[in-house]
Length: 279
Length: 279
Image (cartoon, rainbow over all chains, first blue to last red; front, side, top):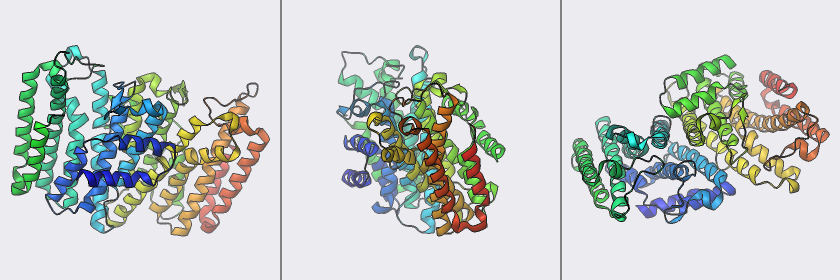
């Protein structure tokens, strides 16, 4: 699946020219686990989705995700030096071009969401729904708001509730949109779509907390104190509490899939893979 | 028309809550001439477009435009202190929230483009086309690339051709998308759509050169030298050459409308208004 996604991203950018295209290419070619687009394919293929139909939306989700990483890394946000083992994009091409590349990548994400393969009536209805789903996940009610709250958080007064809310917006929302969107393209019914959304939302949050745990365990001697107000679950609430949160969220995510019956198997496997991953 | 647009923008943002929504509200309420959304309404109403059908796309265009102004003003781009008579957004809410508000506003622009009023088959087909039109204008082949080239331009080696190309990408592309999109919603045929696109492209470029002339005339004692490599037509090529470029572009724009016959009257009036405006 990852190969199909990487090949698709490659096709999208190789025909573009110019300064911004070159910055986009650099960000996309730096690699990444492509978990969110894989979630799109798994959700769609659990129903009647063909790979070819699902791919544009999977690429849309990865473009939007990558664009959000470019912003996160900016000096006025997390001020990161590296991303995916490469220099952060603004360190390679300058801040202005990094911001413009993120902007253009977000725009391309929406264009991809609007063009699920095929041009029939169902595809057009889908296009409209997928664009709205994506905006809901990424915009003023989603990732952007989560990032803003994250940066503004006073770590010394953070409580579990506000930190959870931030991660739901920052990470949960896009996972949920990946799963619901994949299901929609695959022709899932309303009950299944709600189940996929809920699964994605809880899986995304679990993913984020587990990330914090991996950061911590990777460098146990240095407490992962919150930087720039970033709400790190482990630093705030301790290793044991964080592990329990991950277990609970995975349990909730799995239970959410009950309405899918045997179709849920590949999604449960995906959740297990995320729960035990080493990086 | 401006009142309908302002009321529509108001409706879009008043139901949103949070930090990013508040930054978006500030940027949108700072005012603006709303020329691009007016162009959408004029183009659509020249055909069979109803105001109510046209408004979501008009708001989409203004959201996207406003988001691009927020980016332009950032310290790493034009480093502007003011915009529309108010402090630039990043000076009011900080750089991170300004960037996030621009991002969320771009996303909302795509959501608005995807929901022209009404839910019938024609509307769904339209939604798909409008999203692609917008991405073409704003993304890697449009405004983002123009802004990147603008910032990278070595003013001492700028020639008319490269400066024109930058302004076509930065300003012409969105005007063209406003006019073509309005015409599409209004049900214009292909020949008329091509005419509207060409009209918008030339009008947008003329608008930009005239802006440079207004900047110059407003402060004649201080030559408007290019700042941060910004290609100011007047500073680079002189007042007389710039005036001639404006006249030529307006002539080309008007001629492009020939296929529209008598339907072109309100658009010609709009062009005249832009050509003689004082600010």
